[in-house]
Amino acid sequence: MNKDIYNVEQYIATFPSEVQQKLILFRQIIKENAPSSVESISYGMPAYKLNRKPLVYFAAFEKHIGFYATPTGHSKFKKELSKYKQGKGSVQFPLTEDLPVELIVKIVQFRVAENNQKLKEDKK
Image 1 (spheres, rainbow, N blue to C red):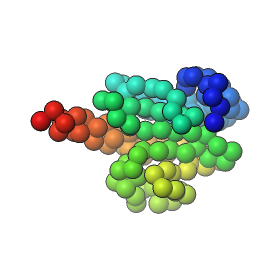
Image 2 (cartoon, rainbow, N blue to C red):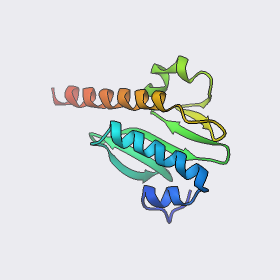
Image 3 (cartoon, rainbow, N blue to C red):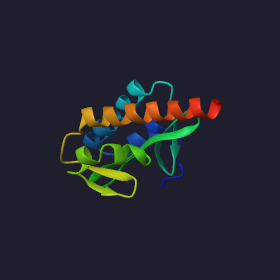
């Protein structure tokens, strides 16, 4: 975890150009589908919150991009994510493959709806 990184642009710039392209696409997907989310660096990776609650995180590693849709985003799309290596609350998209853009969009949209529903419930 690099403690000298304060924003997502800096984070992305630390990677080779091929990886940067995938990270930029990831960021674009999130910003387009969660325009009200707040972007930051948390746990050393790009993090997005909506309604002050965690939405999604992503991070680049040597051989993959980790995606963290804490945790319901993974359970809701269990079948679609089954072809990818997974950990507790994470999925790994290999750098050697194209990102599954449509699936990432669906997961982000699901998490946005879920966070918005929680906000409504909290206001009751």
